Amino acid sequence: MPGKRTTRLTPDQRRAQLVGIGLEMLADRSLDELSTDEVARRAGISRGLLFHYFDSKRDFYRAVVRAECDRFTAATEPDGSLEPVAWMRAFIAGFVAYVLEHRQTYLALVRGAAGSHPAIEDIIGETRETIARRLRDGQRRLGMPDAPRLELASRAWMAFAEEAVTTWPESDDAAREELCAFIEASFVSLLGLLDRPEALGARRP
Amino acid sequence: MPGKRTTRLTPDQRRAQLVGIGLEMLADRSLDELSTDEVARRAGISRGLLFHYFDSKRDFYRAVVRAECDRFTAATEPDGSLEPVAWMRAFIAGFVAYVLEHRQTYLALVRGAAGSHPAIEDIIGETRETIARRLRDGQRRLGMPDAPRLELASRAWMAFAEEAVTTWPESDDAAREELCAFIEASFVSLLGLLDRPEALGARRP
Image 1 (tube, rainbow over the protein chains, first blue to last red):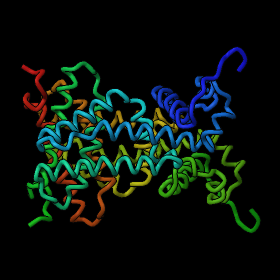
Image 2: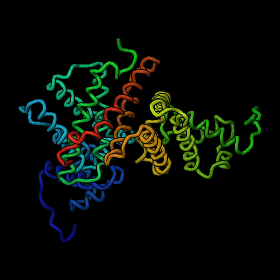
Image 3: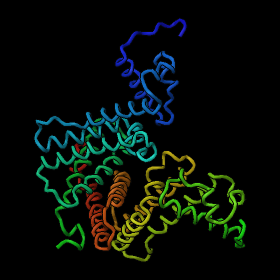
Image 4: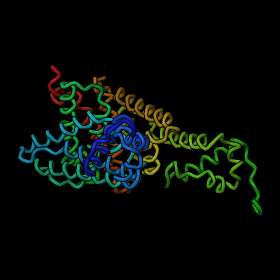
């Protein structure tokens, strides 16, 4: 690049820089629209050099998606020393804050694209599994019994929470508090149905 | 096609036949995997003839998706003369039955693909809007007040119901009854939260 000094970075730093640029760009476009040419240009390196650090476009995409998913799981991990109710609230608040701040990325990656990007399906699947385990952990902390439909109801509740957060129109602090309270209440209310046999149809004794 | 007599169909019959074949094939593959060559082969006509009835692949895809969405909205339209509670139950039972029977198609079209198939995004959007209107209609019939968060809560509840039905493991009649009861109970329970200010955070008086 004539007239431009290339900063010397270690390979790890360079990889982190390129992934960081990818993450930033993903905030307003889909994975398909993430151009490696543009990433290289923003980093001030050649496209060829980018492929010195990543084997392929697919490999680069996977690194970006992995980083995004790590950011998501870190944002939803409460302090392990909290009391059960506070722990569950911290989990919900972390989830709400992350999705509000990374709405586009969340929709593009964690939700819609699972079926359409086979290259990243396993990473998305693992991430969902981590969140599901965390939710089960919270339920155990709260002393919720392991009802036959608990896992299914929990997945459905996560879908509820996702939809509520991604369609929530406001983002000021009071509105965020209201949203968290709504999602908390829905958690108690929906999973509480599992203890009421009459809510679960004629099949139960 | 040597040795095979081509049945004479009117243009409308032929179009309906081709769309029907497309619908059938969509049950076990995504829209991207729906080959017009294969559709023509199954209909016993040439690919060229298929494009006599449809302007383009996109046009054919749109006709298939439109037909599927019509099937879906018809399946979830209760008899207008029913009492409010029976009406709502019929809506839920229709939704559950449709999604259980067309799980793959539902996942591929109505849910995941909205972002990834620009060619059909408007049809999916209209369909979701029809279902949302139907849900609001049911809520009015039940005398539910038009709470500020009702629309948002309803969308989130639909996501909950979708996830519950698509991940429901069994399909015998007793299990289906249990699933319907669970979804009904969740409807009452979630939308009931809207009447409880304490469930909606510190913002309310």
